[in-house]
Length: 434
Image 1: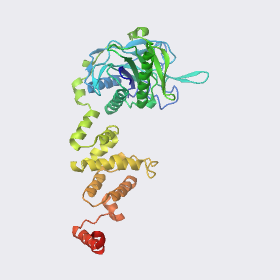
Image 2 (image 1 turned 90 degrees about the horizontal axis):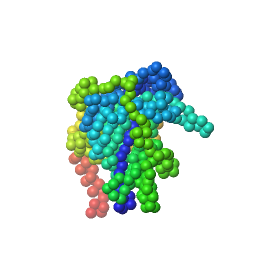
Image 3 (image 1 turned 30 degrees about the vertical axis):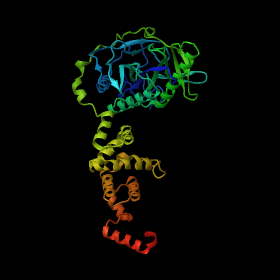
Image 4 (image 1 turned 135 degrees about the vertical axis):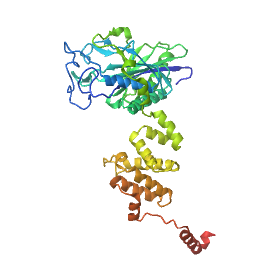
């Protein structure tokens, strides 16, 4: 960023929540694995006389997310109608939340949050050359919207936050957060200024990955600086990210909340969450979260940060590592981890295994793998032999000791015998020895 300028960034992130049915109907919540308009009901299509009902599991997910973020969980909350007219909203309004969000405050990755509220997703528009099609499978999917305080200042901040939110949702089982499927959508609000006063902001949409969020942020910061340098004043607008060109493009002037004419949803009851849920019990039942796992892996195993992040992002692999360590001393943790994150991961990409379809973290026997590490540590196997045995274990299973004996890979560990071999070599090569 050019010296003298400060970028102030806030994020709005939408994420699908994992529930069996949609937010306000009994239609299956399965927008990506069915034919167009397969999971649709009269409620989703806003047929006259239909009434919505609240999906309790979606509300429960929201409460657990808020507890994990050490945020405030509202007692009183309600839903609102957000009015706008577009083909992907058959009712002419979206059921959302304005004044009384379920979650307020909290912190993630060191950044303060404003709120997290619950709403329904829209349908999907598919544009053809001369017409558009609407798939209502996604309409009504439970959707959380998280809003941060304007406390981020760089593309690196944006990517760090998005990665940590993705991990949080997956660890809680609240959502898969696959951005490429549209299960998590990042919108970046950016303003650039030379003073403490915030400049007018641009909201950047249509971002397809976490790395794209970083590139879009970087581009938009530099674009606004160029506008200011030219003597113009940036306008408040919504822009889209063009992945192919690596630029943001103008879409429309940005709306304010008053433009949506919010009012309380009359067809849904008010909720008193402290009466519906036992918050302390739910807090005590939260799983170990990513940052807690990082701290434990350092304290218990002394692993390097690269290995820890590999486990943080791959829960099956982390579970395999922990199952392995049940059969090993902690002094073997680094060696075991190196074989897992380097050798096994490398083998999975090799010609031997890349097309095998083997689910290694669930099929490889952790006890037998621990035995292999013990044999290496005891000097019974060298590194090359251990890797050959490991490949055999991944492909066909088996006991590493039996495999090693069958393949003649057990090393000679008789010190006196080794001394005799070394002495013979020295005696036969006096010049080289000297």
